[in-house]
Each structure stands twice: as C-alpha cells, then as structure tokens.
Image 1: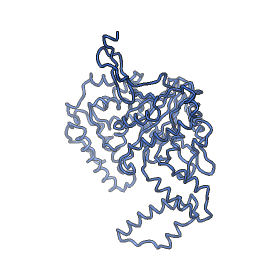
Image 2: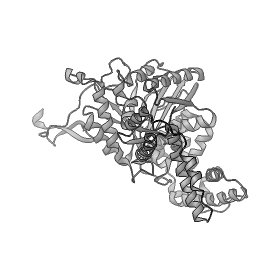
Image 3: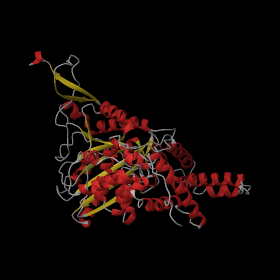
Image 4: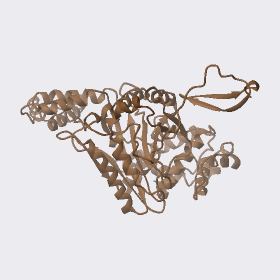
Length: 518
C-alpha cells in the first residue's frame, strides 16, 4: 500500500461516518490491487490491508470524544457475564470496541488465534450491542450484523408424563419437527431468501459442565415467530434466553472441527427417520454422555437458511433428465454446466461473440443416456416431496489434547452413519486444519452461515438429523424441563405484592398477592 490512507482524517461522530470513510479507502485499494494484476480475492485483501493499518490509528485521532463510553458503563456490561480467568482480556477487547470500533476489535481477536477467546468475545459483543449504547457499523445483510443480532435460547422438554404420550413414539415427535422447520421458513426475505437469513440449532456439552443442552440461535426480529413455532408443536417446552453463551473449548488443550458434506449428488436423499427403528438423536447424544466434565467439550451446530423453490425447481429438471434415461451424475452435471453455458452464451451474444454450434451443445449436454434408473427416480421423487432448505452441519470437539479431541470428533461423526441410504446418499465429514480450521472456529462461535458449505436438505432430512429430544430416558445428562408450564389464570389479580413472573409462550406476566390472599 503506497503511503498511508490515514495521514489526515476527521474525527468520527457516528459509526456510519467511520464506515463510509473506510469503504472509500477499501475501494481505492481494490483498484490498486487490480491494477497490479491481482485478480482473486481483491475485495477481501483490500479490506484486510485497510483495517490492518486503521487499527493502529490512535483513538483520539479517529473517535470523537462524545462517542467514548465511560469506564463505569463498560464495567457494567462486562459484569453481566460470568467471571472467567481471562475476563481482563475481554475488558481490553471491549475497550478496543469502544475506542476503535467493532471491526478493529475483530481483527485483534483474529490475530490472537485463540478460539476460546474468540468464542467468549462473541458473547461480550452480543451483550454489549444489546445495551443500545452503540450502533452496528455493518450493513444489515452482512454476516457480522446477522451474527450479532441473534439471541441464543436454551430449549428443554419434560419427559413424557403419561402412557398416551409414550405411545406416540419418536416418529410422531419428529413429524412435529418437520412442521417446525416449515414454519421457520418465514424468516426468509424474497422468493429464494437471496440475503440468506438463517437460524441455528445446536446440541452441546460445554467444558466444565455435565449437562447436554439443546440451543437455538434466532435473529432478533424473528424471536416471536420462533417461540410461537416451538410452543405450537411442543406445548410443554421451556424456552430460556441465554445471556452467557456456552464455551466448549479447552484453552490449554486441543480443539478440532469438521463440516459435513454428501458422498453423492445432493439431489439424492439420505435415510430418514421413517426408515430408522430408533430415535436418531439417541446415538448422537450417547457420544456426549461419554465426555469428561472437565477438560472436554463438544457441539453439533446446524445453520439453516430457507431457499424457497430454488432446489425444488433445479431437482425437478434433473429428475426429468433421469426419467429420460440420463444417469444421475450426468443429469446433475448437465444441469449446472448448462446454466453456466447459458449465461456465457448470453454474454457472448451481448458482446458480439459467435454462438456455439447447436450440434456441439447437444452432444455435450446429452451424454450418459441409458436405461431409466427407476430406483433413482423414486429416490429423487422422495427428495422433492417437501421443501428444501440450505444447511451447514458443523462438529466441534475439544479435549486435553488434540488426539483426544480427534477421538471425540470421530465418535460424533460415526453417529451420522445411521443416515446412510444404500444406492442413494450419506454424510462424510471434512476435518479442517490451519487457517480453514481457524475460520471454522470463528464461524461456529459467531454462528455465521457458510455459503460454500451448503447442504440442500428437505424438511424430513433436517428433522431426522436434528430434532428436540423427547423422552430419551437413557440419556441422564440431557437437560430436561423439571416441571410443566401453564399460563396465568384469567382471574389472577393485578394488585398487591409481586411474587414473581410467569413466562408462557413468549409473554411475561407479573404474579401478585393481594392483601385478601394472605
């Protein structure tokens, strides 16, 4: 970078001023990189270079004094979090947020290369921003904005109380989960959710804990929708906001992580709960029950984004080709290659390039003809029977050593073998390392959607892989609701001493005791 972008600069009174200023310099640096022959990742590189230089600018040079929060206010925010040995680090990072902005603080955390601190700093930022004392300096559709505008909830369900509930069986409970996923599609914006709004579902056992807990990360603007959907299908569920995010990482040990992918084309389905004779969550939770209370932690995180009719339309076209005798592989390849070729043809036509000969295109895209694979036709038909959503499946494990963490990771991965469907599809996990692993830890902690790790899964597949565990009595570590919940009686008075608060279906009601009740 030639010279410095920040020799002369204004003192920003608002985060918006800071953002506009930095964007202008990012655009300028991006042009410089392109001029130097750098074609790939120019935007990311430009942003990185500008932020790297900007973070060294003294606070008094960049931040207006009216924007600096006093020490007492900052301490109040930090004290809302559970104390940990490195809380002084959190205070220092919060000071960077206050004086230099969120982006610089994130850069510092990234440079530290400590997933434990990265995870804890996320909870600090979330709680800090919820106080309303500072505005986000990110676009609403940016990954960081989405991440920090989410609320984490703990979901617990009581065990079945009567024989009627027990006789329903796990398949009926999982069927309700399909309806839950269907209802959560309302978080989408646009026909195919182009901005990739999403939510997360997680099961975790944090380090220094012996409870396996189910969590949900929900966009703040859709909390009411989430509560209504949960309670509509699991009316005895307890939903509690978690202000102190869990942390699975052993700071002094080793941590590993992996992403799930399909072994075959995404158009082919995995095995679903209607063809499994046990609750699929049982083997998964069984792995967590074997972990040590201290020094070990693990989590499965599923990030789910609605996709509208995008995959249904695509898979229907692939199915048509398979019905005409094309193999699944060629039908899948042909569809996506044709889309690219179609876009290129439009570009060539616009710029006056010659069109390819029709016969060449026909030969290229009609390969793989053979007898119709009726089994594949049936399986693809099952895949497109219900709406398809986009999902990331992440597994993170931590232990006293990297070897122990890898052993835990392999055990969790093996629990997904139950979803393998012969002559169809199954899961395979890619364990990451180096900078890729570092990014995975960050995306896990910040609950960020990864577009390059997308798995198209229909509602039945999603419900099979992750559903709220009900009545799994063999899992003593699974946190369950200890008592039922009910709304306040209609005749409850509104005067007298406040004894407590009734929380039911997202609504809090004060419980009073009047003088005549004593």
